[in-house]
Length: 321
Ligand SMILES: O=C(O)CCC(=O)C(=O)O
Image (cartoon, rainbow, N blue to C red; front, side, top):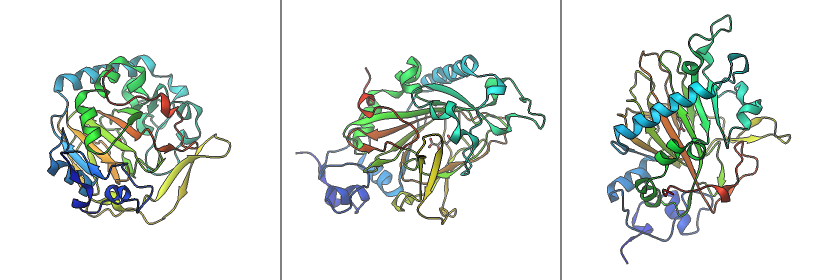
C-alpha cells in the first residue's frame, strides 16, 4: 500500500487522534494516511505545522473575474433598502447582527450585510448601497450556479482529501468585499468558534479574488496557533434569538508572531479551523474581494445550537456535480 504512517509525522492533533489518545481534535484521519495527490508531502507537513497553507495560482484569473462579476451582480440585485440594512461587524464584540433574524436566517440563503462605516453621521449611505456591503452570505455555494461551480472542482476535492477529510461537506460560504476606505477589520478569531463540530473538523478555503495586500486588508495568521485550545464558542441562546459567546479563556491570542498573507488573485489559503487569523481594515482606494468556503466533516457531530443551521446530511462535498 502506498502511504505513510501518521506516526512518522510530528505528533499533531490529527495523528494523536488517529491513535485514539486525544478525542475531539481535527481532522478525522486514518492510522495510515494516503499519499497526497494534489499537495506535495512538504506542503502537507507545512499545513499541519503552521495551520495554514498558501497556494498561489490555485484558481485562474478568469474564474476569479467571473465570480467577481457575479458577486457584484448579486450585490446590486439583492441589496435591501438602507433602512432595512443589517450591519455586520467582525470586531470581536457582539455586533447588532447577532440578534438579527435576517442574519440568523441566512445560513441557507444569499443575503447582504453592510459595513458599519457605510453610513455617515446622519445615517445616510456614503455610496450606492451595493458598494457599501461588507459581504454576501452564507450559502452562495448552493444557491448560485456560478459560485456552485467555483466551489466544486476536482482540485478542491483532491485537496480536501489530502488534508484529511473523509467526507467533506460545504457548510458556509461568503463573498467578502472589503470595500475601499470603509472595509472593516475582521478581528482575530478561529472558524471552529462559529461552526463547532465534535470532533473539530472545520477548515476554511479562502480565495483571493483581488490581490490582497497589507494596504487593502489582507489576511494575517498565527503560525502554529491551531495547537492552542480554542478560547471561545459562539452559540445560539436558549430562545434561539441571538448568538452568544461562551468564553473558555479570557487571555487574547498573542499578536506577536502574526504573519501577513499577501495574496495575488487566484491564491487559495487553507485555514485550519482552530487557527487564529484576522484581516486588517481597508484604508486604501483598492477593493479587496475574497471568497471563502467553510467545510466540515460529514460524520462529525454538528452542534444543534450553532448559529448556522442546515441539515448536514443534505450538504454536498467538493466534487463537481
Ligand atoms: O476575508 C476576510 O477578511 C476574513 C475572512 C475570514 O476570516 C474567514 O474566511 O474565516
